[in-house]
Image (cartoon, rainbow, N blue to C red):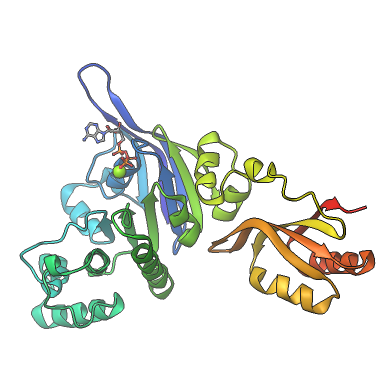
Length: 342
Ligand SMILES: Nc1ncnc2c1ncn2[C@@H]1O[C@H](COP(=O)(O)OP(=O)(O)OP(=O)(O)O)[C@@H](O)[C@H]1O
Ligand SMILES: [Mg+2]
């Protein structure tokens, strides 16, 4: 649906030109939540501004639904922009307008008649969960509510794509979660393609299907979110994964796993498993063993749980082995015996 080829943006400067985006190539499918992560200055905002032609590319093409955005004239572009909604970190609302009037604004610009406008605004208010706050002014809203107005406004003209530039960076963790849930909800309900820019890996892990890691204007690495979490190749990606997972080697260097007189210490590696919560209790019920969780970190992604759990299993060798075989054959969890009491 979105195809980006050889995209480049150079800002001319006195001493040395700034290459903000450099030979960027990406394919984004319809209905996908695609994340772009990178440190400050990586070129993320420039990239997103190129996507809706707030900036003109120096080189390269951007095709949205087969149409080359980068080659469009002004008139064509104005029409195409209605198919692209955008939300921002600082909401960019009109402060002298109410919630209702803010959401109606893009409809006014598009020349939608009054009655139709009203109906559409009502629909949107319902969709983003702002019922009862229609007549409030932005200054009377919380950050999360302001972003809901931003989302409703961005969706007013039924765009095909929603661009989010650090849309949750100004919000607290709970509010961030509620806005992320709203984005997933909209993605599923409307089949909307979402491109989401962030410097926070937990945002990627919670809602994105695929991710591209940007560094110095280029894509350093891209893939399914779970794959990238599991096998980060580039140093920059590893640092982002550690943001969420902690440093694996450091965890394992802890020596609390050794001093058991009986039983086995087992390492369970969850790879996209959907039933991690149930697994431990199921195994301890089904087999005559005691299971103790020692340490670990499991994180949920769009496609299931990912992470490592160290557990101590105590009981007869035979029973422990049966439990291990059960986990190996009936789940996707990888099992490794970490230490075995003699
Ligand atoms: N209008 C501009 N004129 C000149 N240089 C610019 C302009 N906009 C961005 N740059 C430069 O391009 C590079 C990429 O900036 P960009 O804003 O795209 O990064 P970012 O990844 O969005 O960073 P952040 O996470 O801080 O928002 C930076 O070196 C920046 O200084
Ligand atoms: Mg930015």
